[in-house]
Structure formats: C-alpha cells, structure tokens
Amino acid sequence: MVLTVKSKQKYAQKIKKLLISKDIFNQDYKIKREKGYVYLPVTKKISKPRLDFADKKLTKVEKKVSLQAVLKQKLTKNELEAVPSAFDIVGEIAILEIKDEIKKHEKFIARTLLKLHKNIKTVVKKASIHAGEFRLQKMKHLAGKRTKIAMHKESGVRIKLDVEKVYFSARLSNERLRIAKQIKKREDILVMFSGCAPFPLVIAKNSPAKRIVGIEKNPIGHKYALENLNLNKKVSGRVELYKGDVRKIIPKLKQKFDRILMPLPKSAEDFLPDALRAARKGTIIHLYDFLDEEDIPDVAIAKIKKHVKKFKILRVVKCGQFSPSVFRICVDFKLE
Ligand SMILES: C[S@@+](CC[C@H](N)C(=O)[O-])C[C@H]1O[C@@H](n2cnc3c(N)ncnc32)[C@H](O)[C@@H]1O
Image 1: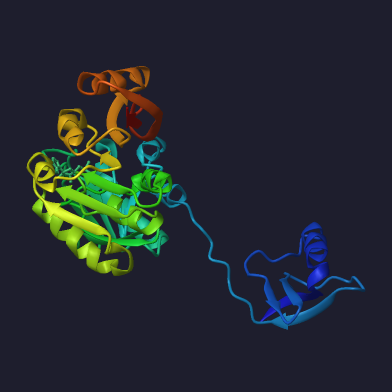
Image 2: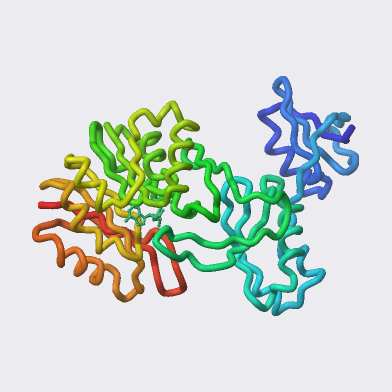
C-alpha cells in the first residue's frame, strides 16, 4: 500500500501542482484513476485541511536508466564518447556499431543494453560493411539469445528475416510509409529489389494499390519474402513476388506499371533502362541514390537525364544518412 491523496477527477491537476510545490509528490509510483477519483502518491502527510489521505495499491514507475549512466562505472570519458548514442533494433535484435577504441568493452556494453531494454533479447555488432550484390553485412553475436532471425513489426505488418543473410533497414520505415501514402486507388506498383518484402507489404497495408509486384535476386531474401506474405495474409493477397534478376524478370512480366520503386542506392541508375521497359507516360519512378550534400539533387538528376528524355521532378527527399556528409536520397519523378 502506498500513501496517496484522493481527489475528485476535476481537482486532480490542481492538487498535483500543490503536492509538487510542497515537495511531497511521490514520483516512484503511478497515479491511479478509479470511479471518478484520482489517487496521487505522496511521500508523507502534511496538515492541509482539504487533503483527503488514503492508502492505495499503486504500480511502481519503471525508472529509465540511460546506457551512458551505467557505462560510466567502467569506461573512461573518452571511451564513453565512442559509445554509439543510437542503434538499430530489428525485432528483438539490437545491432550496434562498435568503434575499435571500445572493442574491449563490447560484451559489457551489450550485456548492459540487454538489462536496460526488456524488448531486446539479442545484441549483435556490425562486423563488416554492406557488401556484394545482395548488400549483406556480417554480424557478430555479443550477448543474449544466439539468433540472427528477427521478427520485426513496422507500419502494421510483420517482417521476418535473418539480419545477416537478407538486407533490411529498420531506419527506412518512414520512407516506406512516405511512398505508401502517395499511392492512389487502383495503382499497379513494381518494387524492383524487394528484399524480404518490406516495401510491398507496407504498401499493401497502407495504400489502396491494386497490385504490387516485387522482384528480388537473393534467394534467401525471396524465401523470407514468401514467408512474410504468409505472416501478413490479411493484406498480402495483392502482392506477387518473383525470385531473380530484375533484368530477366521485367521483360517476362509484359506489363506497364503506374509506379516503380528502385531501392538500390548504389547502382539504381544502371537499372533505369530496365525500369523504363515496365513504364509508360505518367509512370512515377522513385529512384534512390547516395549523394554528397553538395551534389543533391543535381548529380541524381543528371543520372536520370542520361536515360530518360522527358520527365518532371516531383520532389527530392533525404531519407537517411550514410556518413556525416553523404545522404540517402530519393528522387520522385514522373515520365512525360
Ligand atoms: C538495398 S537492398 C533493398 C531491399 C529492400 N527493398 C528493403 O528496403 O529492405 C537491395 C536489394 O536488391 C537486391 N538485388 C540486387 N541486385 C538485384 C537484381 N539485379 N535483381 C533483383 N534484385 C537485386 C539485393 O539482393 C537486395 O536485397
């Protein structure tokens, strides 16, 4: 039982202010609302005639301890500065970037993260950069459950993947939603380089698109994409996935699309002729690129000009940061 002040709902804010000003409001417990009354936790009784004190069962507030605060016990000031202030979470897996100067503390950092975040069950670190045609990145296990398979939730869909064998970036969730929100009723969408199908599924869930076609060359990515269709049966009926090279699959589709996504920033330009085979006047193309701040948007527009005669730029957005001066951008343009 916790000592509280019982107040009618309409006076609760005023009384809370009074308790704070008298320095007796107890921050360790949650306020409880019950049958028109509010129970405000206090540390002790004071003599104020209109305060109605009562004992009540309250829930303890879970105190958020910062990673830095715990690490302070073991790391020097310089080492602390090298600890990443943010990290990726894919499902229940946290993915860290560990700089060399704090490598000797990596397991301690990982174990601390596990203790502080109940939603994290596994901590891994990036052990290489994204490489190869499939854009894969090696991951090293640091703490918690030994798995690289994550079940991620994003914008109302569930996405299962192996974080080492399939490219996936949780940081692109806003970008996926940005595209989905532009889609109008009955649009046919082509997602080139669809990976484990985050774009197709987020679009299926959050837009009125008629049909969404995804193409992915990495067989493991495609395997997870098919599994993800099953995991999202309510929305995946409009999604069709193909395993293989976009260059071989697109001609076989024999279809023109209203909108084409090209989420392969390093080399999307090389595939523009293939995208154009599936496009017609009025098709909107979303072309991704990595560009230096000073080259945005001119360099991307020049790349489009090499392949497309008449087009209109709708917008150019920054949708991620690759390094301090290099951004992931998306050019939305319409064929004229
Ligand atoms: C940057 S990832 C994007 C994956 C996914 N769209 C996402 O947002 O998570 C690019 C993907 O393109 C695939 N890929 C690369 N070249 C390809 C090609 N020629 N045809 C089909 N897929 C390809 C890679 O395997 C990788 O999964």
